[in-house]
Length: 167
Image: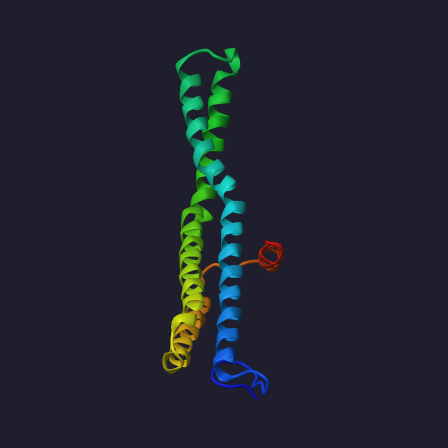
């Protein structure tokens, strides 16, 4: 059986210590989630830049080849292939919603960072406010977790845990 905070009652810990231990556990969970989302953004950013920068370069290249005879008789083919590649990369960027995905990850980073700071700060509350504050934070934690529009792969979360345990 557990109390209102998901903790198993301990006969050896006073209520305040149990609540603070719970706050420490949640603080660590928030740090793991924050780090995992940062890792995810770091992973997808190069692909995002590729699908933004490459089409711009390829389009410019296609335009430049059509202005002059850079490749001899191959100029029309080079221009065509460059334009096609640019269009495909732009379509890929749009269809994968790369910017939206990164924005969603950034929102989760901010949310978990704020929660981690709040869980860390509960130590300053007196006994009369500690349980109430943790209940509010736990509700925010649950809402944040439930509202996640980006579900992270387990390997990303495992890497975040490993980094934090060695950090």
